[in-house]
Amino acid sequence: MDKHWWQEAVVYQVYPRSFQDSNDDGIGDLEGVRQRLDYIKKLGADVIWLNPIYRSPNDDNGYDISNYESIMPDFGTMADFDKLLKDAHAKGLKIVMDLVVNHTSDEHHWFMESRKSRDNAYRDYYIWQDPVDGHAPNDWQSSFSGSAWQLDETTGQYYLHLFSKKQPDLNWRNTKVRKSIYDMMTWWLDKGIDGFRMDVINLISKTKDFAPSAAHPVPRRPANGPHVHEYLQEMNKQVLSKYDIMTVGETPSVHPKDALQYAGFNTHELDMVFQFEHMGIDSDKELGKWRPQPWQLSQLKTIMSKWQTELNGQAWNSLYWNNHDQPRVVSRFGNDTPEFRERSAKMLGAVLHFQQGTPYIYQGEEIGMTNVASFNSIEDYRDIETLNAYRELVEEKKVLTHPEMMAAIHHSSRDNARTPMQWDNSVNAGFAPEGVDPWIAVNANFDTVNVKAALADPNSVFYFYQKMNELRKQYPIITYGDYTLLAPEDEQTWTYTRQLDGQTLKLTANFTKEAVTRDEAAELPDSQLILSNYDDDQGKQLRAYEVKVYLTK
Ligand code: TEU
Ligand code: CA
Image (cartoon, rainbow, N blue to C red; front, top):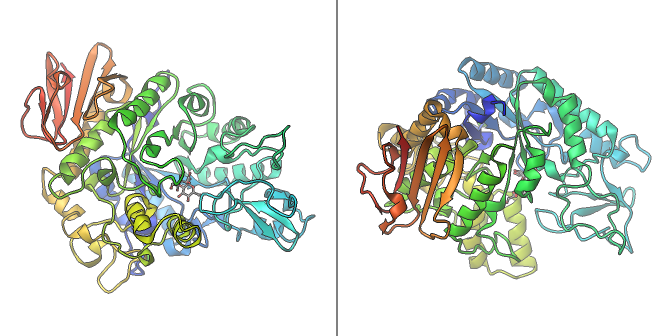
């Protein structure tokens, strides 16, 4: 196995809209990111993944792109981007861009042309189908509620949109579409960017026959379609392989066997994927995340351990708890009460970062930012997924009451991750100056949970993450070691070992607020304790949310 720089890197995800406003309009921007590069550097990250910054009508916060080669005016100009890239590189930070090519905005000129007539030169850039018996071709649902098909009156056909109506799906069967995308990727790579995070990249290949029949049963969800590997290999050959970059594909509905192909060391597709199995453990079978369920530690361990062992030596894992679509991990799998917030945030960070793979830190995770409990009205929310789900489930179908849905939103809404970064305890948390209304309100706990406080406290979550990043640079076993899970059935503790070249690392963690005693928690022979979230070591006893990492000498 060749070693690659991205295996040894730590990625910090920046959601530019919510990171730092630099021109007092309440919207984070590129200049704001540039001003905070030293902070990201101090944390010890190597790579920044920027959520989409392209021109967009913002139906889905930039995931609906109307021009791939220009910058959203809210975020600044191309000159601001070039300056950010240059300064980041000067500080030794790489920049990975979001690549959203399953769909465009309906305001992209390709789609504006496409919808004009059935014989327009761009017609076949998108997926158009005749009505079947007066309705949509099949029962595919949009991720943002309702049918995935929209009838367009002008030509009397439906177009496919797996996300909002304003995000029509591109037709990857069309070689011109693929060529246009590869040219655009090349244009960005020639600017010097360091890779791509590819949005829902395993949804790009759709079946040919959309109307279900006995001969052609249509899959329930168009993931991992018939030509997806062919397209990715073509993209790799024509674009990716020409640059020393990193790629990570966002791939809902994949299992390790799929990842072995998408992100195999020798399959010439992508470097890693984001899988979602561990993100589904608190979902309801019917209503998904809008009826949150209790989760079991044994299930979380089983899933993540399976990814560790099944990819080992053959493909590479991405490691994440959080991103701009997920609730905050300390509120989800930890304990966000003042008593345990920092302790459990550190424990969760360590459990993730000592697994094999490339870790991703989502902005604010490194200071233990929490879900937003202070939004009491649906009006406080901005996310299209949340707002559409509220309308569908509470107002139209009436399957959830207002209080039930608000509880679900507090638990699951994507906006939990999208409130402004909490830099200090001034009004607007240092994200924007006093007197400016941020595009989404600040989480009310910014008074105590903020970067300024974290940097002033040597025991903070921030310094714990910084320490993990330092240890990673020091000990290759953290990156490359083989993973083994101990006591898989244990519902309170997670213990695993890593092994490399005769050395052993052991991590043991308590996921509860009760003290527990476990044989596996004992010190490894001939080892040193390289990290812990308590001041001393109690051997087999683990206190509330305690985590310990031993490494043999
Ligand atoms: O998300 C893809 C995806 O699978 C979503 O349905 C995700 O599971 C959901 O947001 C979780 O609630 C990507 C982007 O990360 C997301 O922000 C975009 O809205 C979406 O694609 C469409 O581009
Ligand atoms: Ca701004």
